[in-house]
Amino acid sequence: MRRVAVIGVGDTEFGELWDSSFRELGIRAGLAAVADANISADIIDALYVGNMSAGRFIEQEHIGALIADYAGLARDNISATRVEAAGASGGLALRQGFMAVASGMHNVVVVGGAEKMTDVSDDESAMIQSSAADQEWETVLGATFPALHALIAKRHMHEYGTTREQLADVAVKNHKNGSMNPKAQFQREIARETVMGSPMVSSPLRMFDCAPSSDGAAAVVLCSLDAAKKYTEIPIEIVGSGQASDTLALHHRKDICTMEATKMAAKRAFEMASLTTRDVDVAEVHDNFTISEILAIEDLGFFKKGEGGKATEAGLTGIAGEVAVNTSGGLKARGDPVGATGIAQVVEIVTQLRGTAGNRQVKDATIGLTHNVGGTGATALVHLFRRV
Amino acid sequence: MATAPRFWRENPSRYNLMGFKCNSCGRHYFPPRAICPVCHRKSVGKMEKVKLRGTGKVFSFTDVHEGLEDIALHKPYIVAIVELDEGPRVTAQIIDCEACDIQIGTPVRATMRKLSEEGPSGVIHYGYKFAPVKEK
Image (cartoon, rainbow over all chains, first blue to last red; front, side):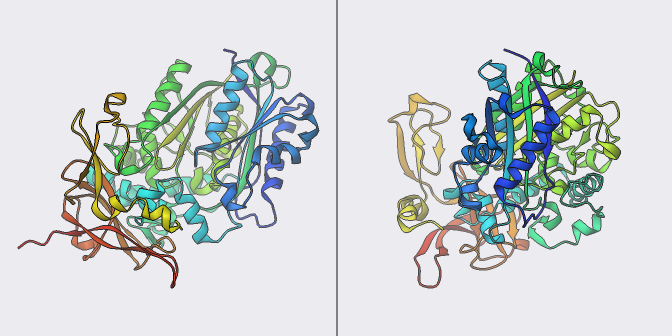
């Protein structure tokens, strides 16, 4: 297997981007990544695009060919593939690109992620997002996507004494980080009281516990580590890649406060990289709800099960904490254009490891982690990155 | 929303909590599945239809204030994971009570109710919801 490096990253701003179409967002991110990698288009062998539901959000399928076409690559007839695993679509696309380069099948690969969520009504968007869960045995019975995460939160509070305030602290931290990210959807700091006083969505989760609907795209360029030195002075190596699945419906899991898929994906990635949780300086984790970040930092091994809330409250996940979590603002503040999210996480980690994250820079960051989840934990991807 | 056939084909389970028992290991499953995740191929041909009793306990619950179109007949409504006495867990609405009346562990029993309607002149879908067991 060849060693694989990220040589270029690019993204759009995230938000309600009414003036931008899906294809325009995808191309903007892709062009930025290609410019950052300092490559010419004719050496690109393949494109992978993470996208959850263009078919329902913009009534457009066949996303791989669409993006390749508008990227000006139709005449080059490159291999173009759309990848889907709900919220984990981006992370899964990265893994496909990683495997393609590692295996020697392709030399230079662009991996993108894109979603355009605001062309439909809020109700329609909620229905589409709920399709990441089990339509027949969860959604039909009244469980919204936030409701399923509320069931996790309620149980976590019951089993471990996690408090309402600790959930709020996740949002407060991520909005603070987002305030330092010029591409974040929300760039304003909030207080605990803002979260606790926001409208109830599904108890105990309130509006400020939930990531927003967003438009946006992100892209990265991969090639072998040997070739990477031709293009960049600071290649960021992908040293570990782990993927795992679990039951589609939340109720079928023995312990709904643990995402086994996250634990297994992390185990596989850490084993591949010969690293441990303690080596990680900076992590982008899947905080589509505040409770999700608490589960993530426990299941990834940063904190013991049940102590994620306390650790957050104590500031251990802040930029100067034990492990800096979601320096970009996370899904919560940077925004969550579903298919783009897993790639935007990589953009942030690469930026951190290059040391170019500005006033949200984690000091001496050398090892980074991305964690991307589909549904309520039926798919999880964990990737590990190292500054070479 | 789902078309009528998509809904009707699940009626045995939605109306009568029809599940499956693996006759290789004895575990119960709901909804039906063709293969036991514990016994794998040994279970093929040994999954037997069984009607679950419909009694269980609240495992977790939430008061849904922002419900999905067509499903939110009343707001807020309670959604719970119920652990059935035979072992399987199901997601369902809890009715005939307020969220403040129940807690994790509250005993509940299945009852058939209206789940959703496809607009004012469309098909009405029925299925299980759960109500707290009243002490006598």
